[in-house]
Amino acid sequence: MKERAENGMLREGGTSGRRITVVGLGYIGLPTAAMLATHGHTVYGFDTNPRVIEHLEKGKVHIEEPGLLAFVRDALHSGRFVPVREVRPADVYILCVPTPYDEKAKRADLSYITKAAEAIVPHVKKGDLVILESTVPAGTTADHLGPILARSGLDPLRDLDLAHCPETVLPGNMISELTSNARVIGGLTPNATHAAEMLYRSFVRGTLVTTDATTAEFVKLIQNTYRDVNIALANEIGMVAGQKGIDVREAIRIANLHPRVDLHAPGPGVGGHCIPIDPWFLVQDTPDARLVRVSREINDGMPHRVVDKVRSLVKDVEAPRIALLGLAYKADVDDVRESPAVPILERLKEHFDDVRVHDPHVKDPNFDTVPLKVALDGADCTVIVTGHWEYSALDPHKTRSVVRTPIVFDTRGIVSRPEWEEAGFTFGTL
Ligand code: SAJ
Image (tube, rainbow, N blue to C red; front, side, top):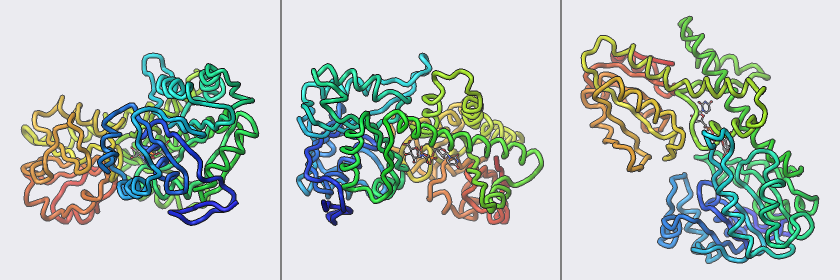
């Protein structure tokens, strides 16, 4: 069967023209809903947050992501993406709700999945396809979602096609990765796997890899854990390099020329809603899994290292004014969830009376940000915490003319040390 691929083109083998309800229109659900709608499906987008639906009804989106607004508008104009205030009956249900980490219980908080599943229970009918995209501990689809759906009177194994298909898109590059990434499809039964595979084939150009639901859940967790442990290694190497006066980024760049070495980059800490959390889901029932826990500790300890370094950089300055550049957890996104900038800001405020924060992307009322000019004006230490392009484009000479003390601390390795030193700056690195 031929199906639509990118924006109206046809792809081989997928099913289109399905009625799909997407539950949860956040960072994953919204682009996924729009993608499905631009590939021939009719999509009802539901979110418990009325603000999300209100935005969509006005042709706006509540998330900053390159290309997302235009993409969602196209889907809305096609008439096949319909934001709804109540869950609508469909033939396919895709759950894209958050799974936060419950610090107290030291476990994944599955309450959003429970609520989403309960919301579709009155509507599911025999033959429907239910897909869980949220990242979850291995076994959740079979042991948690299945039993909730069974309250409908249907057997999740025989009457429904139930599958876990984890999303793998990188914030900042979501629209492209939604179609190009390989996708893991894990059904509770071979039939469920096949049904989910047909759906994703309608828009995914990357390889579709099929397995069972529990393996699919596990794969997602080990992908993000690999990244967390690798970053922890880079951060530890950075500590050793710093003691020996070696530029860690230069050393890693050279080391990575080896065909079997792929060290990640050191930084001020690991943020976002996935990488600091998913390793905990992986080891929550395995107290002996040490490396994953130590890696988490190393990465969570990075904000302390950043603040210690700032303190040593300004130790000779009286009543220093600190300019903190960046609140988002990584470059060119507006997302502050788990951002290392937040604990850095809190600790800086414990040590210094005058801390000014700037972030051109973040519009979160919880943070008092100021324009860049105000942040830099009279600053004694300019701390780059997020690698936004606006900061890599900073001119050291112009910056020199507005700050009071020429000290810059680049935690991301995004500005040129020789250029800033040439402009008279003392240059701090991790
Ligand atoms: N970071 C470093 N050093 C690096 C890379 C990242 O310090 O070398 C930091 C970033 O600054 C950021 C954090 O790690 O604070 C996480 O950023 P990221 O770009 O590594 O990942 P996310 O959280 O934006 O997206 C990840 C991706 N997972 C993998 O690359 C294995 C993405 O593909 C997943 O879809 C996403 O998690 C998710 O939803 O799980």
